[in-house]
Amino acid sequence: MIIGVFYSAYLFIYCGVSCIGQILFGYAAGWPSPVMPKLLDPDEFPRAPTPMQTNWIVSIIFIGCLIGTVISGPLSNTVGRKPCLIVGGSTASLSFLALALIKHPYSLMAFRLICGVGCSMVFGVNLVYIGEIASTEIRGMLLGSTGLFNSLGFLVVYSVGNYVPYDVINYIGMILGIVFVTGILFAPETPIYYIIRGRNEEAKATLLALGRKDDAEKVSELRLEIESNQKVKAWNTLLKVKCNRKALVITSLLHIFQQASGIGAMLAYTTMIFEISGSSITPYIATIIVGAVNLAAGFITPLFVERFGRKILLLMSTFLTGLTLLILAIYIYHYNTGNPAVLNIRWVPLPVYILYCISYSFGFGVLPATLVGEMFQLNVRSAGSAVALCISWLAAFICLSTFGYIISGSGVHVAFAIFSASCGLAFLFTIFFVPETKGKSLIEVQEMLDK
Image 1 (cartoon, one colour):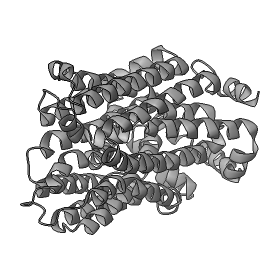
Image 2 (tube, rainbow, N blue to C red):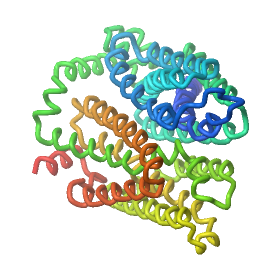
Image 3 (tube, rainbow, N blue to C red):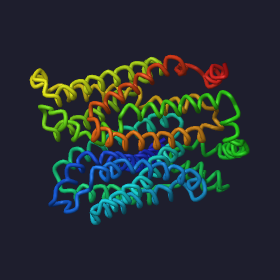
Image 4 (cartoon, one colour):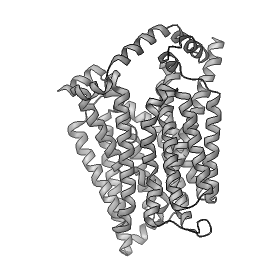
């Protein structure tokens, strides 16, 4: 028993190390918020990027995320989960170093793209890594905690980035990458990868080292199960079986609506939005508060998800995010047109922004990924998840890149109105097309989708 507990401690240590990679991802995604004001500082950037170039610097990371996701899937099955994490973390770390040293606008675009490739490799493979080293009893808890570490990454860059020079922001990102890679070097490869490669003895040794003695005795059974799944043509089954095809459409559209709610823009442009809105709270302080609320919401969200149905939470989330965005759009419009009534309520943006973050977190933020795990057949779940994630990255890029053009041409209130309308469409889509999966078996969910 003592040995089992001792080795289980190693399991939590390895998961903790891998979650540093999730902090790195959140740090990279939140990087634009404190950096954008610095791009206009001639002392830090003698050659300031144009608004169009700034727009690409902010959004191009998600094209990198799309590329990294496509690469990491087959690569992790070929060379292993651990080497992928090392390559991804090293790539992200080096890109932060390059961002600090080379300050030409086109260089910033290129290195943000590369940073996206590295961070998405870490983001995607980390979920596989944690899922494969954790025992069934604690797997859900450990995977659920990854979102908290993403939010922690945002909070770190919001808190530190507004008060240190541009170079230091990037050096911190580089150090996060180095710490992550160093930790992963001492972590084991996953037992599932060893079984896939026919290295059963190494799989047993790893399972024992992780305190999973019962699973170590079932390696042969796991091998047969994996071989059976490998014989299934996942992409064929995904597209030809009605329930899987319907699940793919529903989850893909939910991921599109998720990004169309404006979450990427709200987190990347946080400081700038508070400046534009004339908030009575200092923009830098307001940004830190938003980061802290996001982190706190990550602790609360699992309680909501397990207590209420998926559909009712999605309906509440889409309605409230749409409402808060509409309130912000109306407020900013009247502020920009000089309505004197607004001058007495300049405190409004921060609480409304906070409500947006909370309402996004308990529904939009987690349920599209949750439904991927609950709607697909087991043998196509990996393929369905990959498609949904790629669509999410592409939608994030489109929403974030167009946000810059909209605020330049029409104003930020127009962008918020569009995001609000998207939430309204998501609300209607949820009513008519999203099934309730809470408390239902996979077979019951599949039967609903077959109708």
